[in-house]
Structures are given as structure tokens and as C-alpha cells.
Length: 301
Image 1: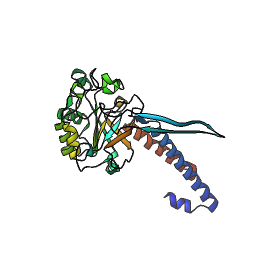
Image 2 (image 1 turned 180 degrees about the horizontal axis):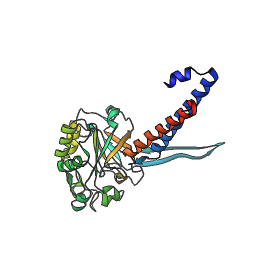
Image 3 (image 1 turned 45 degrees about the vertical axis):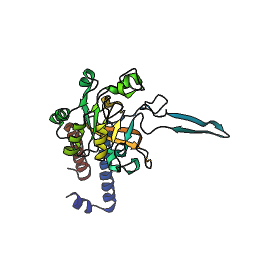
Image 4 (image 1 turned 120 degrees about the vertical axis):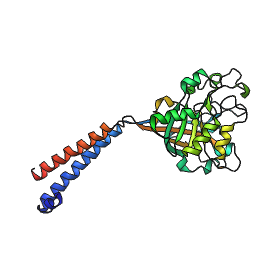
């Protein structure tokens, strides 16, 4: 209807009308962007890589050397050298870390590095039992609240352990921080991980502790299950209390290290702080108002 009315106008009037319509559309788009843009949260789930970064006993320490930092003629210049083991701080375990012939770091498909976040909160259980392992019943409790864990999910355990980082005796759960036989911290149970892979086709699992296997593990069965199925693992994740149990999208940034068994990562989560239907209805009402305004302004009714 509007198209016929516009075509019946003079060329000058037609140009003015088209301009008003474009302006109105741009205003609507801008309002919608503002409504949503102000509510999108971006959260860093990564501990900073420093000399206090925690590594498993037997690894080298983090090294950061300033090669040059200062004025160079007419401009300022900085350049540094750093070295780090693959498995320390907030990092990823490639499947090859514990299973021969599986993906090394550079082989992990990029689509595996992004996915819907599923946060399994076992804080109270881990407080009561430092050797707690996430059970299938914990997953079922999550699904009873939010529905099935989606395909391609990145499933993360929140045990509250990140608050202990980077104090080694707190993170490892012992004063004997050089001997893993004394370690006590929570993680996943191997049966739980097997269930997730078989029944929910997840992309990745992660923990806010030093290992996807609990502190007292001797054979690292969770590592082996993940490796066997080509599922990467994340360890020493921070700030999981800052994102919702459902609704976040998790992004894993890892260096594409040839032949690596893992490496440091930058983990970022985004989520809509107000994904309510009222927000959508508000946008629709705005569009309706602009439609009425456009009709009145251009066509007089």
C-alpha cells in the first residue's frame, strides 16, 4: 500500500518521503541496539599470567624478561620475552595430553572453541568435601531447572575454588605443595564426563581447580576419557560466579601451537543481563509507534 502511494508522488516528494522512512528505520535500529547493547555483559574468566601463576609440580616457572622498555630516539618502544609451560594458570588440555593419536593444540577445530555455557554449581558440596567429584545427579539437577544441556555445550564446574587462587597451599589443598599425593581439590567424576559425552555431545568441560581430575587421583581417568573422545579440558578457570548458570556464550582463545598438548587461554563469556520477553515486547512496541508516526507524517493518516 505504502509503495503505491509513494510512486504516485512527485519525484521531489518521493525523495523526501524515502528519506523520512530511512531515517525512521535507522532510529528504530539505533534504539534496539541501545536497549540490547547496554545489557550485554562481557566477563573475563582468566587469571593473569604472571610469576605467581600456578603450575603442576615438576614444571618450569613462568618467565618474563624485558628486552627493551624505554625511549628510542623520537618514540617509545617496548619488547619482551616470555616462556611458560603449556599447563599452568588458566589453560586448555588438548586431547593428546592424555591420549595418543588424538588432537594436538593446533588440530582442535575452531568450532569447539565456542559454545553455550553450562555452569554446574557444586560450591556447597565442595566446601563440605574437598575431594568432591561432580556427579550425574548434579547434571540432572541443572537440567531440572533449565532443560537439557545443549549440544556443543561447554560444561564448567563452579566449586568456589577460584577464590583461593593464586595461593598454592589453598589451591592444592595442602601445605605440601610439591607432592601431588597430598593434594585435595574437587573436579569431575569420570562417569559424569562419559555421560556428558555420550548423552549430550558436549564440546568441552572445565573446572575452577588445577585439574579436571580431583586432587587425590592417581591415574587421571577424566583426562583419559576426554582424550579418548577428542574433548578438550579447561583448568584453573576464574570468576565463574560472575556469569549465569545458563545463558552465557563461552569463547576460548588459545594460541595455535603446532604439536602442542595444550596451552594458556583467554576465556571470555558474554550474556544478556536481561533476556526477558518484556525486552522483546518493548522493541516491538517501539517499532509499532514509529510505524504510526511514519504513516501520519508522510500520508497524513
